[in-house]
Image (tube, rainbow, N blue to C red):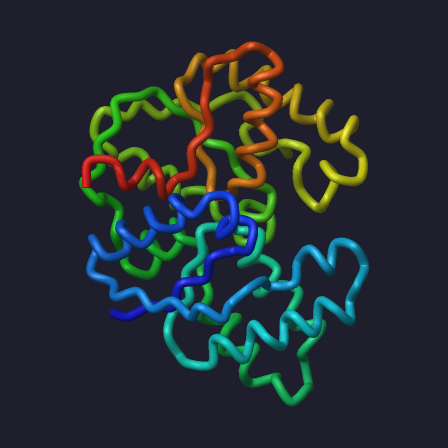
Length: 239
């Protein structure tokens, strides 16, 4: 199977190794990976700032870049949620109606794609660590992704997965809150990191690097040695 890779703009700039690790895992499970170098952004930052016209312009570019019937896989649930749940309001009954409907059907977050499309639960990864999983709001509430990443983590050799208290609560990063009301975002993160520290883990794992970096800032401020790690970076270990 050949899939199209969508790498969100901030991941491309700041965490390219995570994107490359996702490619390694996808190739390991038998996927050919196509990457359109013209891709840029899904439009979510513009939407969050209220620039709907700019968002539609970026979204139009995105649709033109993925005009085929291949699956599209992304290492970030917020961008996938943007395309699945907000493109309909922008492109319904437009000249791009059929194209956006196809993309809406074919785009998946990485862990969801592995488990529910490829039916892969074990990639033969190995990481000696105790970890907890953070449910990113976009993954949990907009895409109903909860079990897939946990299933993948449960199969990693040497990994001990423990659940923190209130694992489904927000970390404070989402929706642009961290940029607009940083004190509130930090207070929310403080509550979350208290539960992480209480869980006594080596790593916090999630599908979203935005959440993870926000949590890392809070953990560092508390003097915690717990690190953050994207699920793609976990699953590539031992390959």
